[in-house]
Image (cartoon, rainbow, N blue to C red; front, side, top):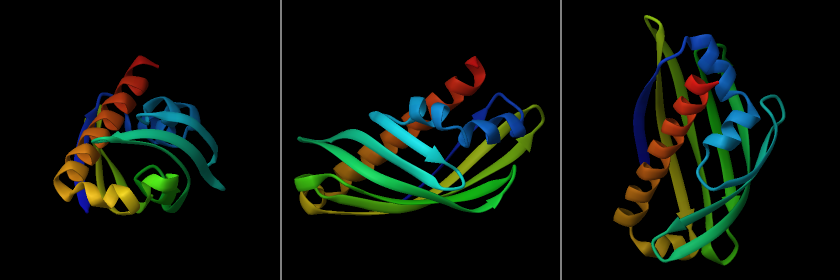
Length: 147
């Protein structure tokens, strides 16, 4: 599955860059995030609870950041295990572009899932993934503009 989107954030690019590298901001922005530890240099570990259709699963996973070009872009890659619910793995390219006093954050994600989650059907999974991505970026924008 591939997912693309963008969010216009009412803050300068260096402020947005600092936020997307801050574990506390990310933890508060990720829907269902219970734990997020680590650093950009060493990667992050996370525990996230997600509900997709009738399945609610707690995923434990790891995320690495690479291809870092401050303050313009980086690549995220990670995988998580949800026990009997299945697994998820994927990556995202994140780009920040200045637009006057604002920043346009653009992302392109790709992912794979397996286990019980894969049996739910691509429509349900795709719509849930889009909803979670939109929620994450709205939360991120709110964290940045309120802080």
